[in-house]
Each structure stands twice: as structure tokens, then as C-alpha cells.
Length: 122
Image (cartoon, rainbow, N blue to C red; front, side, top):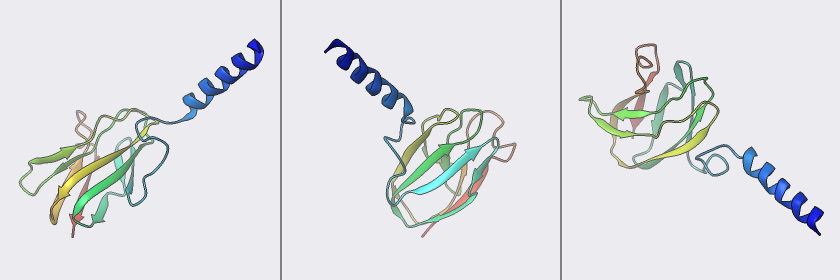
């Protein structure tokens, strides 16, 4: 009985360690996948419908990254959590109005190195 219990607990620990972080198991339906690397977003041009918008952020880089959405005046609309290398998470922006936006990584120097893009909301 102890061997079975120990084996079951070990299996649970292994399965828990295999899951990525933050996202709860995979890309949410209807979300827009954005891959972050050192130092770019892919895609760097995104078009979405207005309203509640979810981005599935995948950090394939070797450094932590985030995604910050800015309006035409440069004001921050919303910024994701900082995502560690190899992790992914869902980033939802509620009530995103139609218009043109930019997005950048706010980590020091990343936007200057090209980690930025254009977001069009229709």
C-alpha cells in the first residue's frame, strides 16, 4: 500500500512540474498568440476586434518579457505580468476600444532593441 501511495504521489509531482506557468494548460480559445523572443514580438503587427481581447503570450526567449499596450498618445492602456523565459500566460485587456495602438516590452532596453509592434483594434 505504501509503495502504491508513494508511486501515485510521485506521478502527481511529475505531472505538476510538466505544466507551463500562468496559463493554466494551453492557449485559450479565441485568443491571439504572441511569441516573445530576444528582442522581438511575433507577430509584430496584430489586428483584433474591439471589446475584451485575450493575448496568449509565449516567452521563447532567454530573458523575462512583458507586453505593454499604449494608445496613440503613448499612455499605457494595460501591461501584462512579467513572463519568465520558457513560460506562457493569458493576458486579457477588457473593453479595448477601436483604434491604433503600439505594444512594447517594458524591460529596460528591450523596446529600443526592437521589441515593439503595432496593434489595430477594429
